[in-house]
Image (cartoon, rainbow, N blue to C red; front, side, top):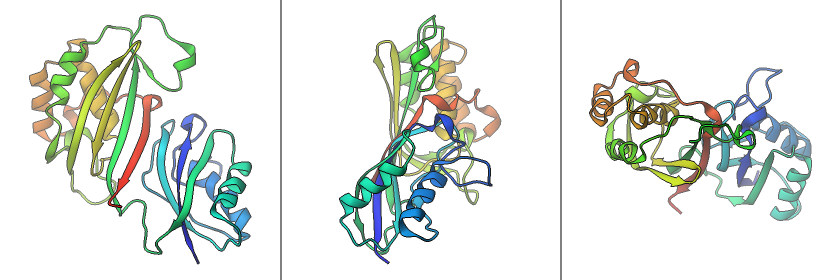
Length: 246
């Protein structure tokens, strides 16, 4: 059957993550498969580039699936979106090579994490940011973040989804102040389980002054999960993009 690929954006607030789980748990993959299977008139499996956690969002999740469809790709995209819930949307749907695999063919993945750094909470941002009351030292956080790029062992900040390899290549990691928000951008060839949220939690400790930059450096070098600070909550995290060689 022809293979299709598409980008998916979603608000992960109401879902227990991307990956399909046991009955009774609503997931992004489950909703996509429900709709696409209805259109295909038989069970259809989708494959995603990444398995985002409960409450995590996406702007550029990449998926693929195999399906016989007699109409245009645009018509298929429209049909999927009409039937999806309002917090999930498919776009840029097109034909793909039969061997295309969203996860294995990916070369880079980029995430954004948002901190709302004000004394009083902002209710409209509660599902899309981490509210941190104490003022954060962004310069110190960036000094620590500058230690991350390169090929190194990130065992302190996560666990591998498969096997035991905790070495990853990280391309960029930096904070920007977008008042009243602090936005962290991080890109790597792949990530460990909860790696971004673990890094953010430890950088926040630097920003609060509870950790020095040298403490962060020593924790990273230790390659010891117990050296990580408290993990940041999921709602501030968004899968921004996935990059392929083409």
